[in-house]
Length: 313
Image (cartoon, rainbow, N blue to C red; front, side, top):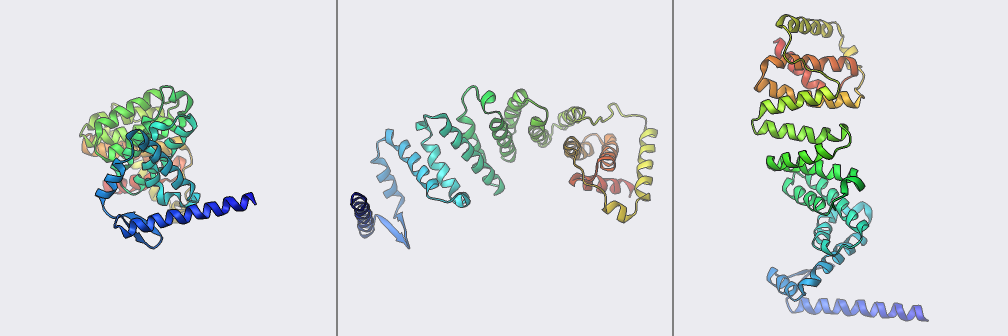
C-alpha cells in the first residue's frame, strides 16, 4: 500500500508539472514542439535566469548536466555531449570530490576530441583548457596519462587555431614533465609544425634532427661528400628497379613504433628541407626509403616514393 501511495503521488506530481508547463505555453513563455518544451524568447530565458541567486546557479548547472547524462544511454552520449559538458563546466566550482572532478576532466577530453573531429578547433580548445584548469598541483604524479593526453591534444587544437605562442608554452610543459620520450612524440610534432608555420624553418629542422637521433635514426650533419650521396641515390634506384610490382605490393607493413614515428618526422623534414635546406632533401628521401626497405611500408612511404620519383624526373 505504501508503494502504491508513492507511485500515485509521483504520477500526480508529474501531471502537475506538465500542467504548469502547458500554462506557461498558453501564456507565451514557452513553445511546445512535439514532446519538447523550449523558451519562447532569449529575454524570457535571461529574466528567468536572473531570478536564480548567483550562489545557486552553479549547482543548478551541475544538476542539469548530471541529469542529461543520467537519462541518456551510453551509446547516445555523444549526441548531447556538448550540452551536458557545458552545463557541468558551469557548475565545476561545486565539485568537492576528486573523483567527480576527474570524471568531468575526462568528459572535457571526450568533448575536445569530438570537436577536433568536427574541425571545430576553437571549441575543442575551450573544452581541453577547461579540463586542464581543473588539475591540482600534483596532477603529473597522480594523473599522468590524463595529463599527457589533455596537454598534447590542447597543443594540437591551439596549433589549428594559429595560437603558436600557446603551443610553445604547452609543449614546454609536456617536454619537461613527460616521463618517456615516446610520451613526447606527439607534442614534438605539433611544436615542429608550429615553428614551420611561423617560418622558423631552421629551428624546426634542428629539433626534427634531435628527435630522429633519439629514435635511432641519424641524419648526417654536416652532409657527406656529394659523391657519397650520389652513390646512395644510384644504389636506391637500382634496388627499386629490380623489384617487381608483385614483390613491392606484397611488401610487409611497418610495425616498429619508433620507426613509424621517425617516418612521420622525416615526412615533415621533406617539406622543410625543400623550402630551406635543399642540399638535405635527397638525403631525407633516401633515409625514408631505407627505413621502408628494412622495416616495411607505412603511409609516409608513399610520400618518400613520390619524392624519389620527382627527383628522378
